[in-house]
Image 1 (spheres, helix red, strand yellow):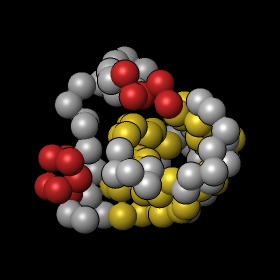
Image 2 (cartoon, helix red, strand yellow):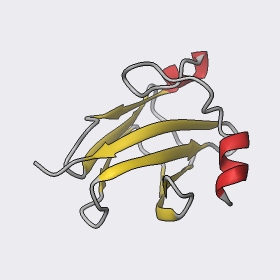
Image 3 (cartoon, helix red, strand yellow):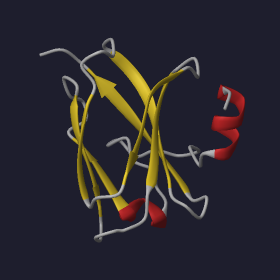
Length: 107
């Protein structure tokens, strides 16, 4: 997926000061802490058996990390990423996609 497609398909129109989409479906997941030194938690509102695809993109649209998750509480460790801002997309099996801004900052 290129950057243009991601921006046009990812519901990243509006963000609150916390970096979360202002969308009713955004309640389905929580991403914290943000900013972080590279270890993040991604929690789903309810237990799930569904598999979610999580992709992390640089601001230039380069795919930096990709993982499949199927637990309610997940830890994602990203020590290899340089400090900066990234976009995280989470997509379920029905094609619903959520996007978050991720800020990685060394301690």
